[in-house]
Length: 500
Image (tube, rainbow, N blue to C red; front, side, top):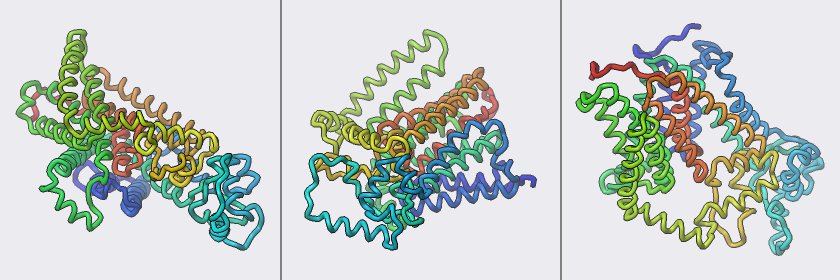
């Protein structure tokens, strides 16, 4: 069935649904609430359903050879869903002995047909251990207690995931994101549609940066209004640090696009509204990043801008000027930022590292997480189950609740084991190869707008080693949209100052 647009413009209904979801989701606490994630996933699936209805499988781009590189992403989704499949004790013991041991320890009759519920067995065991003293030689895996009744299944059969409900939520979010990537990549191949995506996502990021700055910098102005909206479950990211992820995506792109406009139009760019809008958006987002007080974000944004300047020029003299200018600007920025909350956080962070406190520093927590990897090397504990299992691996006396590992790559390994880790590495390599192919296609233009987009994606991906921005639904959705746009990139036509 032929595709038709729902508007007189260049976007169809699926594009409208995707962009509307991306615009609203940051204002539902970044998608932190489960209801907002489910609503967003429903809208994104609806966008895919409309594309499928109107154009058949070609509406998703299926069957195209260019999509074969997405095989690891598809396999990753299948693996996450496979963690929900009930398995007999013998098979489970072969795949993941530690998981089978947890079931056997918490459910005495789990390997035998039983009419009692798993939850009742857990409760009886806990009551029997109230007065018991843990043995010193007990391994962390022996201390893991099932937090909920496992999925309903045949007697004695249990899934790999130790938290099936959480794993199901992850699967139901990952699949819409994968669908969005396919849809945006296909739509963005049309120059007019790509332009709509570019302008809309830039507007979303600019408004977010400006809102972050006002929310933190001038609480007396905007915050009461946000508090009022909060009663209706709407508001900005709850943790200012998580806002920095969006700024990492935005700032290099805005600066690169403004640079591209200047290259195209020369001095006449200063009188153009699009140039002024990019510069204003970049300034707003820089302010939003500063008030977020995220140490890693500030360093990565500075690094991405330095890389943009280095890659955007040619010739030794120009690059030498970039190095010298960056050193002067960097020294001035460090001196100014050291007197802000960022400087105080860096000092307190160093102090916590010296005292080796797990509650305040990530490396000790990662050291504890590596012991968890040893117990669940192949299959992991189930996507989303990290928060339920990790407390057993914390040192005695540690009462901080770790909902994430603050390292997305490590958490993938913990949740999905070496199977998921290998698929993720494969996917990253394939994605980088696609970006390289796009880069070769536009190499002659030295397109700083595309470079800024790619450097923003790179910055937030590096940040994932010390945080979990990709687990914030609003940030993840915009990351996927920009990733698809970067691959299907369509350079704007050069105007040489003719068009304002």
